[in-house]
Length: 400
Length: 216
Ligand SMILES: C[S@@+](CC[C@H](N)C(=O)[O-])C[C@H]1O[C@@H](n2cnc3c(N)ncnc32)[C@H](O)[C@@H]1O
Ligand code: SF4
Ligand code: SF4
Image 1 (cartoon, chains in turn cyan, brown):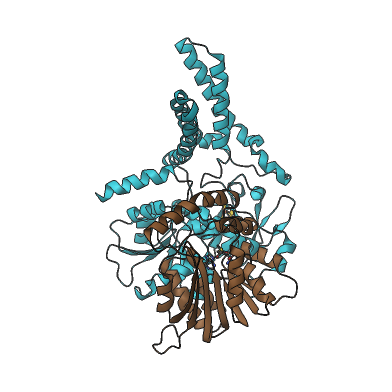
Image 2 (cartoon, rainbow over the protein chains, first blue to last red):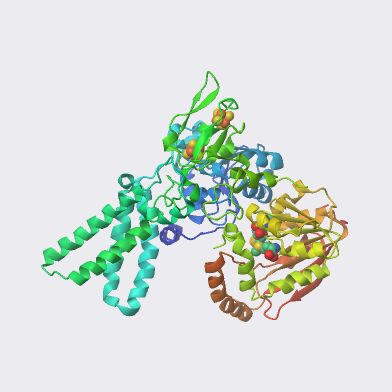
């Protein structure tokens, strides 16, 4: 009956996906791994661990579950909870070193924003490589030892989008439903139906609605991030709302029971839901970074002289922004507009040839990104300016 | 939800609220017991304990995983105090300090954030970093011993924890079996002080000389 329990956890955790769902950091044996079996590592978000294990069915491998506070790979890496330190911790405490003869570790590609491989190597002797983005590509990757462009690319297919719709619809309809049940039990069902319809529409039509902050040439003052609703791309969300209101009108016309109060009431309620769910539509996806963050207008600058063409940027970019000129041994940013500012390339470039630049032309020190990540989940105590960074760029080494 | 470091500037307020102000007496008691003079504050957070120890004349090193927490600690440190900050995980102490570097290692509310395997490894490394007869001081939230007390603990804490989390994204977590783990890492327990409810404990232990080679 293990699959019943599994399916149940899957449903519950999908509905409550906004919460961390930690599982014990540990070493898991998949199949019958030998002393040369591959060693993979993932976050300790329960849903992810189960999905990776499903993808690895039939393989022989070791899977390390790192203590990332029960948060998924992408969010914990960008939020500074999936860094070299968590990798070092599980390498040291899981007993894996006694199990295998090699020291090669396969990390999920989306952890590249957080994990500094150099520190892992220095402190443990393990050499880390970035495997595919998706767990389902692991068997092919392990079989060929080769990562295709496809495996590097982050996508947001319909099934994933519907999952995110559930993630939003469930808490919104649960909280709203409970409140309504206290005073207006008749309204519970229509409200719940509305929340699910809107969430499914927003995420279902996501590719056509956009939802990403545009790369503006002009720097907007910090407070404008509270006005994301007025972001040009977000205005398109209103299409979903208008469609919903049109649906309401159609329904009343069909029932031949015009009730202007109900229309206004539901119209406003649906607008609220659209804005709530749409508020951070971009941040709910693996495609874009959160639009609620002040750093959303950064772009990548490449110092061609420093670049040695070792292609780490190309290896970790989830949007395939880079091409490598193999003759001149130089990287080129072929698709600058596809960049989602995840920071993976900046963190991983061995020559420090890449950096984020603000719209006003300020270069953000690379050490700052390595140390604080993009910190999407939290806030910095100290504003990131070139000066502030100079004062303590000690990284993880001992400071005087 | 334990995104503790996500709001380091609110951490101090959060932890005072969650402990109903008692956290200050914990820092006080720990710094009173600490012998020093070379003292490590492990999981130092915003440096509340480290500053008190420095004020008592210790040479203090604060270690924490979170660069944001350490930023707050640096801002709060009085100029010229014998304080030094290192960003590292608890199982990376041996990478940062040579053996026998400290007389005292103190740690408040950090062990409860580690996995059991991490606790064991951290204690082993503490053993290595302490000088002969060195002192280990751990103050943390523990799971109350009896079922009745545990239920009481949960009931009393839940609403407070929810409010604190909502306001400050700060939370804590109770640990089990710490005394056995300390003993297993080669320490002898000298002192145990608990609050009335039995959910917060201060443990003092001393580095046993490595007859059996544990951790040496
Ligand atoms: C609840 S706070 C306690 C802070 C401080 N000791 C106090 O009493 O105010 C826990 C601290 O432990 C740190 N921490 C958590 N896991 C850690 C680890 N594995 N290594 C080092 N520090 C860690 C966190 O960054 C956080 O600052
Ligand atoms: S990782 Fe850095 S050095 Fe290597 S190709 Fe990319 S930009 Fe050039
Ligand atoms: S180019 Fe942009 S999307 Fe690609 S790795 Fe760098 S920051 Fe991320």
